[in-house]
Image (tube, rainbow, N blue to C red; front, side, top):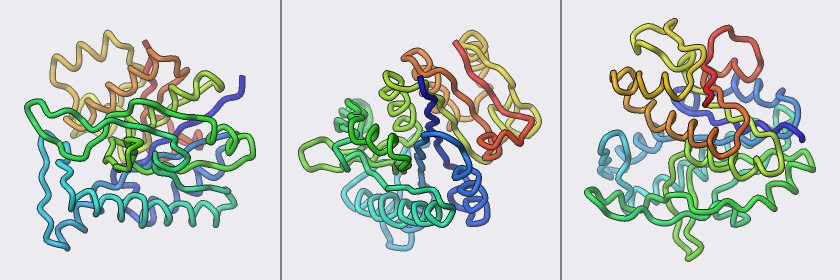
Length: 258
C-alpha cells in the first residue's frame, strides 16, 4: 500500500512570508503523493479588524457570523490558498486549491447550538475521495483551506486540524496515511516556556495523564484530540513538529501512538 502524507501547516508559518517560503520549498521536495492543509486565522482576524468587523472568540474558537464568513472565505480560499498554490507551482509542485465544496470533497453540518452558537461553523460529516484519488494518481497535490460546505449551498468555517485528520482517515482505506502537523514549535511541549521540553513519544495513557495536569496549552488540546481520533480510525502515523520535520532535518518532534 502506497504511503500518502497529509501535512497541515498553520500557526506563525502561514503569517511569516520567509517561513512560508521555506516550508513550501521543503513540502515540494517531499516524495510521493501528498496533500497540504492550511489555516490562516491570524490574517483573517487582521482583515476583520481592518474592515471594522467584530472578532468574537470563545475558548480560542471563532464565532462565525455572516460578515466573518465572507472575510474567512476571501482570506482562506482566496488570498492564502491561491498564494500557496502559486508558490508550489514555482517549486515545481503541481498543485490545485480546494475548499470542501470543490469536487464535493468535504461535506459538513452546521454545528448545533448548545451552550454557544458558533454561527457558520461546520463539523465534518463525510469525505468523498474519488476526485482526490484521481489527482493523487496523476501527481497533482490538493491544497485545502479551512472551509467546507453542507451540500445545500452553504459554506462553513471548519477547523483545519480536523480537515487534515478527516482526510487522513478517509484516505487510509486506499493508502498508508501519515498525518503531520507543522507549526512554529518543535513538537508537543511539557512546558510552553521551554522550547526544548519536547515530548518525543506520547501514547494515550501519557496524554490523559498530562491533560489532567493541565500541561497542554488551550490550542494544543483540540489538535491532540484530532490526532488520537485519527490513529483510532486507521491512520498509520501522526507527528507534530516544526516545518523541518517533513524534510527529516530536525532532531526534535513528537510522535503519537495509541
